[in-house]
Length: 547
View 1 (cartoon, rainbow, N blue to C red):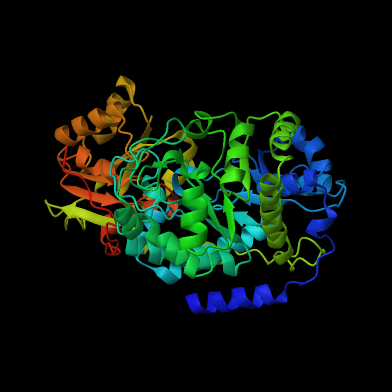
View 2 (cartoon, rainbow, N blue to C red; view 1 turned 30 degrees about the horizontal axis):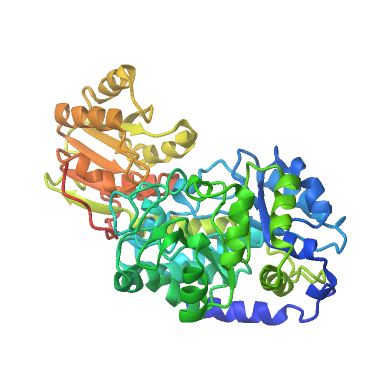
């Protein structure tokens, strides 16, 4: 099936026009610089970018997550493109999105369906399924008017204490990350969506969150090549269209600059040694790991000079002031002008390939809701993992002659996931069992503990779920769950996001991992508990020792 997707991509690319109405030479230096800049907007914040878009001083917009519908998302994109039509050369914007699933997405944002976490896809081991889900999701993105997805994450998560990557990674094995990452990339690209992989040269061995501080990866050059850079190198060989840089310091490659500001990493390594000819995009420049060194405009200048082509300015900027400052720093000097020419040229070439420059965009695909949901159900059945079952509780059977069992399910999850939790009850109710549930707060208080005990009292089985983002252990949640596990030993524990929290619960004899929280994996977990299906998933990371 993956080969079919590649063929579809080739046919899609071949159908695009070769000629464009707007060439690089026709643009002023200001307009060329504008093509390299991408701002972040949502329904509420878009208006402040209207002046710079109408002047041609912005080349793209990243749609920010927000609690609004798909209809509103389309209206926002249409409005942005209408402003671009008022610019001097009427060049359409590149519209991008961070649609990578898991911790970067919740089921109520922008109107798009749930996308499985990368770690869940890796646990399924289903390459064709990963390609299929990306292809179907890509069609829905294209229907909305989106061109770029900053996905998949190709970071190899070798550090269990990584505070930001976690289930965003396919796992700790570079071969598996490569295999599954290429499947997702090929699926998106076959659907006509530009896949920009991240975070080069690898954010998986970090112990700090680059949103707040500068991570340092102390791996040797050889280790970086063999483990962390390897998936990116394979993506390049397989025709990836874009690569995003990480705001991370790699002393073995450049002991002075984070990757985003490093000519040795972007030019010598990525361009020369790895032979990458596509678009280099920065991570958001409003992150603390970048602004520690410069203002956002100053960071944009440093990134462009280092070799970036598409600069993500972030959300919290004064658009006109920021543009003016970048232009003032870049307008003089032949080297600066050449860099603007190169970067703008790559952006315009991508727009040309997408059919944006002559109005010959492919016809949007038809809705794919049913096919997408069917694929999600299949992947969920393949991914949920039985980590251990020391007491042999799975399958949990009704004893002959006894009344229907009572199951208590206690969830620790944000309230925005409440509608997803209901699916866990369905398989039990279909068997005529009794089930009661309680959704406790992520950081539980005494009231949550009391109500959880009220639910568990007298139940034949207690099911407890945890939710941890990457390595961030919630101490209140950990203590409350461990107390419930001790008090009610007939239990099944489900890790619903990062499996790195499993060692925090050594008392749990029966453990399932879902690598994400959504209605599909929860129903799969219930079916596994009941023996309706067998657990098929394989843990894609090595867990640390129990705490």
